[in-house]
Image 1: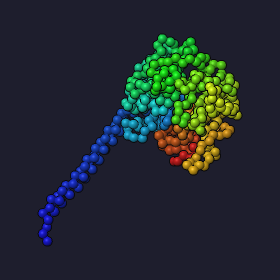
Image 2: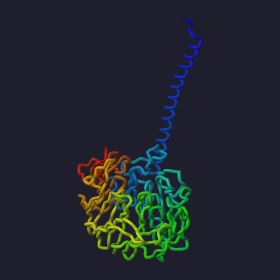
Image 3: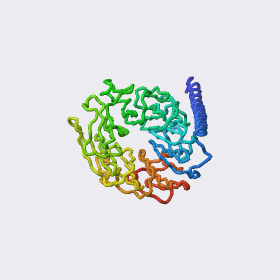
Image 4: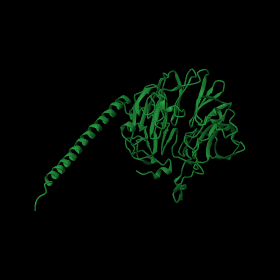
Length: 475
């Protein structure tokens, strides 16, 4: 049989392709290793600029004065002005560019003399005793206040171009600051120019501002003469603009305001209800949309109220409000409808007195009394109702007392909780895939574990179940 004249060339081509494939694989492997090494070097370089590793958390015996959490991030402020963080303050799961620096134990930030911290969804701001403001983390909505959207995350604390600041404000993807002279600043989401912000926006220069209220997609500024001004989204009634953006400050004709608040999220497909707490203890609903006749409508049945907490209801189409009155009694109000400018709903008193504070996230609710007793009013595993497509989560009909005494601080994140008692012991439970619980290990905690500042071991033997629903978390 005569051999084909094409056999040898074909074999040569096949051998060449196989060799080229293996060479490319080797080259790609080398390139990937080099790229990974460069990323590791960049991370280490950023860590050197971001954190002071000369002191560990258990060596610092200063009292904890504040604890705040983001989506997957925890920050602690100590009495000595130091800030300690753990977790990842970006929610993405991609490479270093999006992930930022991962931490799984409390690490000291290279920042001194801090007197206030604020943790948003994926960013942190800190205020020093000198009136300077620093930020770090993700920058999805120009939330850092130092560079336009898309530039970040940046984990090194960077000073904002504002000074003489007295107080800072954080809410979701929004932030604000108030100077000692009454000059207000804001940045992040809720302004249609958020995608190009490179520094905080200074506003209302001709009036002295005494307080700032951050609501979902809106900012409100209160003057020393008790006037209210606003900027952001859903100001159709006041701006007569089709898209509802108030790019310039608009005056909101409401008086005697103590606080304006909303839930951080959406109720169904709508923006959440804005609640107004008046100085006389009454609570009103603020309507800034064109389809509402009255700008504000009073909620009947709530009086002598001192603090308000809009929360996410188990039925996302219904707005829910928790309110503490001047006696420390707790009330729950469910808004059901609004007809002919009359607010209708159900108002019930919850069997807890002497209430000091409430923390809530996605329906997980912790209630703190003045005597340090802690209660859970959130989701219950016992109340899970089977459904063909899953489960309906219902609230406790009555609050459940938790076995933690002398509580002074608490924070609730997305499926995790952090509690600090008067002895600076840290209790924690929940998801921990980003290291947001600290302790040095990336594992979920089905029960709440106590660890002292002097013994940071996530496998400590003493455990307390703070939220039964956490028991369903996978390891």
